[in-house]
Image (cartoon, rainbow, N blue to C red; front, top):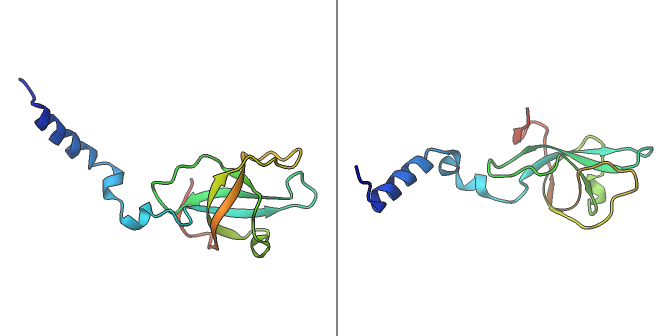
Length: 122
């Protein structure tokens, strides 16, 4: 049996739309505040402040790092245990010596959030 290129293309589109991206809403593709994280502050630790990424707000978000050291976190968000919604960009800045986070990042679109929001990791 010979499959024409057009029929193959239609079949391919039909299969691909059964996966999650075709079922996502437009809001889930929005980039504003894609990650959910918890702020940790320790004056006696090598990392005076770091954020654990605990979830996402969009199914299309890719998790590259689970702990990040923020270089530009606003003072109003520097509270131990506070949950934040944010985006980040990896930075070339150096982390404090002995700080064992996955990456140093610059934060954007930072907002206060609740622990029960977004899609949490298991």
